Length: 217
Image (cartoon, rainbow, N blue to C red):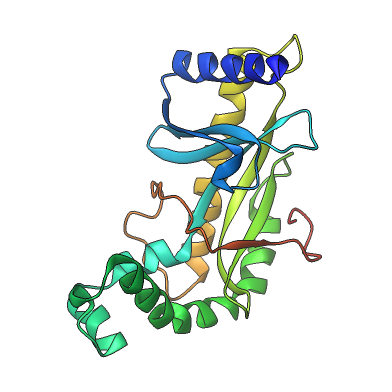
């Protein structure tokens, strides 16, 4: 356990030295599929750094969740019309569920363009050692965005702020490039503010680990 806390301390020190903000700590009981880690903001981009219990390394991921984007594309009146109820009268959790249910039609439309997106990604993003993970929503596993993933190795003596900086910068760059591809192809997405969206993915989203095109997991 001491090694774990020392590794986390090394990451935290590198993040501070890089000018990044640690938003909150992740603990096993938080049920984020990681053992320990941090939520951070790097140049306005939300990222999660966490260690899985079966690996001697930390994941660094940057998500782009379509439901977050789609909700911002509609006014309150438009959302009310789509669900045919007064959303302001609902408790926060019920309001969130109603909005997501209303937006599932948009996710279905986006899902029909996934193959085109995957093809464009394979052609336009230079080969690199990051992973692109598909985020899905609901029982039908509708395409709900993606996250870019790389790894940090703070258990190794060679770990440095330079390694940290290179990793977060690469994840940010690939996430922004991939976001642009998504907005160029997926009709229901709005390009406004697409490059710097930093919201955390909703807790009910899930990653799709079925076989995917090269560069995807």
